[in-house]
View 1 (cartoon, protein in one colour):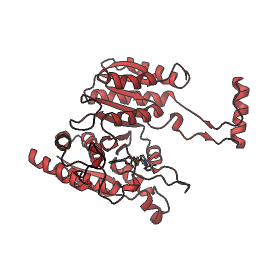
View 2: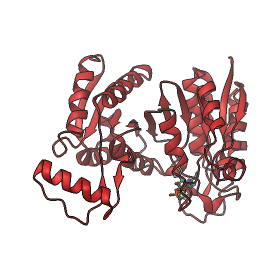
View 3: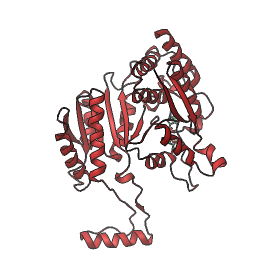
View 4: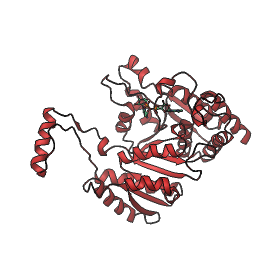
Length: 363
Ligand code: NAD
């Protein structure tokens, strides 16, 4: 077992509480961490004038691995989402979101185990937007109408959806590499190529080419609407879903709902130069400082981080300890209870205590 230098971005809202709980559990695995704690989000604005100070990026660039709490997107302040900015600045092009049912959670069914690999940098999320009625929007509408001989209503807003060969190639190759590393058998490309031939169609064509070079892993494709229905009816037939940005975002929440909600949905943003591990959920501001929300989504993200760091036995032990706390159902937060107001629900830090006790008992 070696030492790891890891950037820790506690974030804001409930971020610091759930990160603190997670760090305590990580340290109880016996793996040694040198934490480089970096402030981002609401707390950083007063001190640095920006929610994403340059030292945060510099630290992640140096350490190549970060554990991150959620960060609030300030409304109406002119600051864009720190979470999106971080992914773009570090070119974290793959967002990995495992959907795994733990016994005792409020699962749609107990045998769920698939992984969403979402492209994280392009598609309709690229931020290429034109507001209705602006000269730029009017200009673009006129250009497009001339080029395509199709009428766009003059009172339209526009969002551009770029999907590139290079962007598609690297995400599909990532999905195959992830499948191989994690002993998974199949990659399913998710798209709407029947309607959007030059974006989703391109993604699918590239995916098929990449699949030919990775013939040790099975490959197939599904149209996104059918994919949603299939996931609910026949999830066992799916393994890794490789999705462009928008479909990946939507299917991630479908997946989170299938395994009992956001409190158990982990994530990893991975690029060639670094990886940032964070929960799917946001900063849940109304619960800030209440020791109330579920830290397990960040804890399970930390399990992904341990696997990324090749600390496989610590990852297995930590995941096993979390799973057994969920299965026992005693030391869990309100969201894992059948009824919202269940007075037996415990707080964030008590969950950490219970997971640590399990870890120690298993040691
Ligand atoms: P949210 O995920 O913060 O919360 C929605 C609701 O889900 C909460 O009110 C709560 O009921 C529940 N919830 C979320 N996390 C939970 C947990 N760990 N345990 C138990 N229940 C939990 O979504 P939101 O309210 O739309 O967003 C709040 C802020 O977070 C926004 O500013 C948004 O931009 C930001 N956000 C950040 C990230 C990120 O940091 N990656 C992701 C999503 C949203």
